[in-house]
Length: 207
Image 1 (tube, rainbow, N blue to C red):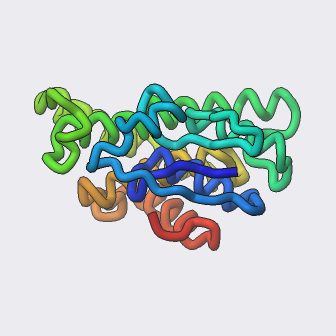
Image 2: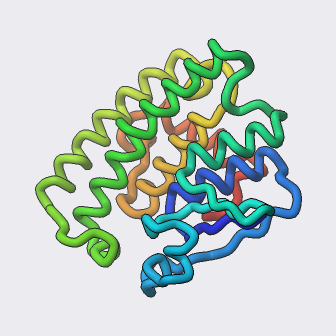
């Protein structure tokens, strides 16, 4: 299989870390440049008409896009270590937390940066500066809420490491790199301690 990704982009990183946790054998990572028009090339649009990464090219030639779908596929192929829930009840609750993390933490970071950071202007035209600023403020509120959650439990979705931690970590690291966000410096000690624990995992690697 081939996994089409872009360096530093948080969604592809989610898929890469998930695959690393699963120790997926013979997975080829193919880098796609976000800034030279490669996403809009006829060759890449044939793989994903939306022009976005990640995309997983299966051995039979089919293309699977959307990070959550790719992770679901890999979880089915390689059930252990389990990252999405054992049984329907745990799966439902982990999915709930993962989706909440994606929509109300991760996406706020992405919206803020896509509409406020000059380096991302080629990917988002027009940029709406006021919208970006408001999303950044909502992100800080979401981070404080998450800090409160992590004051009561070790991981985002409960007492064990799951896909929700991968989603939150990739969002945090995107904010850390592009927004200079540091939870510890803002008094969010539980969020910072969680981030440092996840960053120490051998499967994380560099973006």
